Image 1 (cartoon, one colour):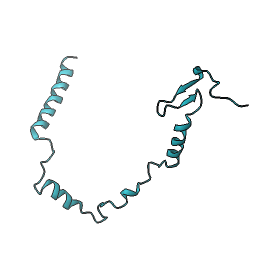
Image 2: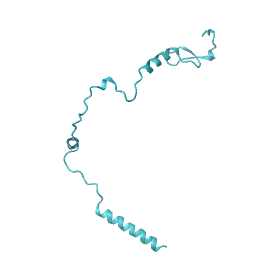
Image 3: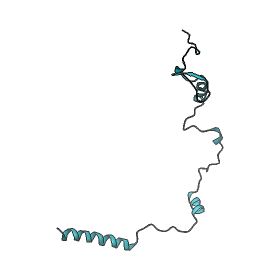
Image 4: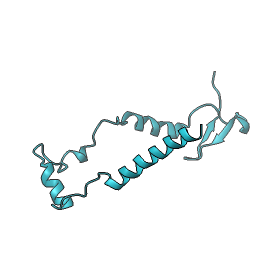
Length: 106
């Protein structure tokens, strides 16, 4: 059974938006399908590495973290992140005030 493309009505065909060839509805574009098949063959996985990344100058295993921190942030000591004593007193006073309010208004 031979189907002639010229015998097909225009309703069953469309122009490919990429290569402007006449394509039958429901079938892939002959020009674009070849390009897609080529791309699928060269498809890489997420864990694979491109050959241009083989010679990157990455740090060795003997990386000195302490020297890096000193070089990046300086040698000045960092501010402590503890809570000041007056915030502790405020928290204790609030807890006592809430407990007293619960007992008083029962």
